[in-house]
Length: 190
Image 1 (cartoon, helix red, strand yellow):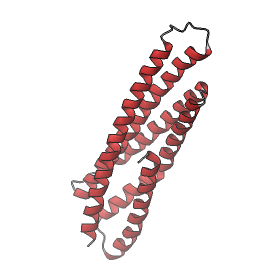
Image 2: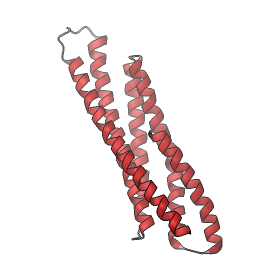
Image 3: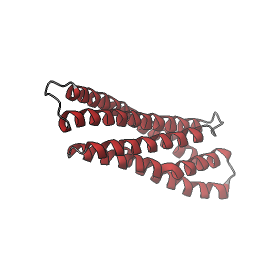
Image 4: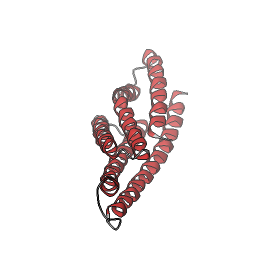
């Protein structure tokens, strides 16, 4: 599941939580549900940043396919800015969670995994950008075929792929936490 799909799933869950919150607030004034709604509202308010980050990364990937290394570097810089901004927003949300409630702790753990996802993609973009510089030198300047630029670009792509693997593991952990969170929330609402 890519970040865009993850964001879509999150938005659906946030919407359902808002609806549940309206019902719950009419019946009870439970602080935990209120806190969850506030957290989800804040997360939704920054979700567009994550979508933009992934769009720039996807554009960079397309640039790589057509060997447009200048545009790739620009899109990677823009993606990194957005990944950084999104993870900063997530950290700010986490700083507001002051409870030992199981649901709030699970939500906090989910937000922390999202930060790992963002940071992995930030670093993947750094390596992608470096690879593009090396490949640009190798393919678009007058260097001998024995120049190390091509090999250095390959090493950067390998490092990028490692960061993407870290991203994928964090997405798996996030999804496990989301499943646990959903079950616990449903149990509380019964």
